[in-house]
Amino acid sequence: MKLRDATLSELPEGVLRPDYDRAQLKPGIVHIGLGNFHRAHQAWYLHRLMQQGEALDWAIIGAGIRPYDSTMRQKLLAQDCLTTLIELAPSCSSAEVIGSMIDYLPIEDGNRPLIERMAQSDIRIVAMTVTEGGYFIDPATKGFDPTHPDIAHDSNHPDIPRTAFGAIVAALRLRRENGIGPFTCQCCDNLQGNGDVLRQTVVSLARLSDPALADWIDTKCSFPNSMVDSIVPATGPSELALALQLGIDDQAPVTHENFRQWVIEDDFCAGRPDWDKVGATFTDNVHGYEAMKIRILNGGHQVISVPGEVLSIKTIADCMEHDLIRRLFTKVAENEIAPLIKPVSDMTTRGYVTLIRHRFSNPKIVDTTRRVAFDGSSRHPGFIIPSIRDGLAKGIEVEGLALVEAAWARMCEGTREDGSEIEPNDPHWVELNAKAREARGNPRAWLEMRQFYGDLADEPQFADCFVKWLSMIWDDGMEVAIASYLTP
Image 1 (cartoon, one colour):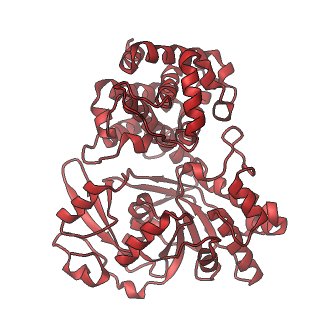
Image 2 (image 1 turned 90 degrees about the horizontal axis):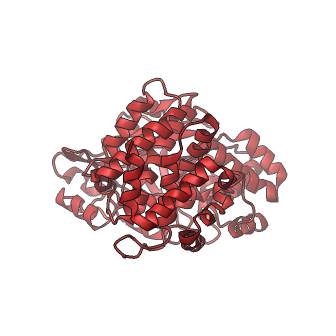
Image 3 (image 1 turned 30 degrees about the vertical axis):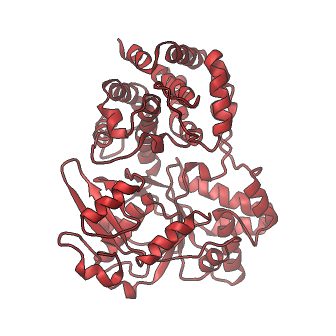
């Protein structure tokens, strides 16, 4: 059954579908970055609210800024912006077609369609999922990096921006000039203080070309912090085949685990849907939830995926089947990460480690090791290195975290232990690969990348462990190094 509005009533029995009249939906949100995560997470929460007859004036208009987004646009428009979500629990699966997205804007140089749509008064939230590394952050200082060529272009040509942030600034300029008022800018990426990071990027970019506009944005717009959580693999041939097995011809289906969490700071300058009615949490303690999730889940993903890639293990579930890697995750998470984190009201840190171990072990989720290990130059500074710094400051062991960083250096050398090649897997791969090759003979060379490690090369408790582990990995292999760490 080709997925379209016209075929919704003919979907196979057991497949949930929209109960609301999609023709009556009105837009309220522009979402930039229509990847799998957004459609399985934020779009699902809105869809479920629409199923209750609410938020019908908050429908999503999709948007992208890069040429490769055009392919997704074509796929989604061809099926009326519907998406099949396939939930994969360890013992069963289920499918649901969601319809909270109603359009996908054309992708053009200069982003005029996006700017003009965001400038209209019915848009009250502009949200985005553009990956952790997409916010032009200096990895050492955590401040805004104005030196990137795309930022330089947008500051010099604010009417024809290249970036999503430049488009947001241009749209807000039009709204201010036309007396329409601000919108909420909502970050849905895995960044601690993600709303604060988004504010920093947007306001700093605006200040380069129009300081008065920057002050207006900083004062009038809101940038709520949030924590987003669900494991959502990339879509490939097996996911397309799975949708067909269910009787649905969907060219952009999404598989996901049987878990979602969305914790949001209630700071919306132009209104919002009542997502809390369908399971989201509004709280003033977003930072508590996000610290637990980013350090243990996102950090844990790096703990297992990096050695897994070196050992040619294909998926995260397979990594958790590997006795040494599973035990590595448990020991590092329980002994070196969890003691640094305050529990939230409904979850202890040790209980959260157990939850994440079960989620990572779900064999139905075919989440590739390569996908999870991607963009380590953003993920290690964001997810692992803060735990190292906090551990050093509080006198907590960092030996396992040093092993993880040594494993990353080994991975970036570009070969697995079986001799196969690791294809470039990071925006900074050329630099990482060169340093990793140098570090094979001189391990401290890796720590000289101060844009990632700052002064950690000068901390003997960490640096000496790192040197020990990287030397052992090269001399004896990854499994011997992990086993040595696990030995009491």
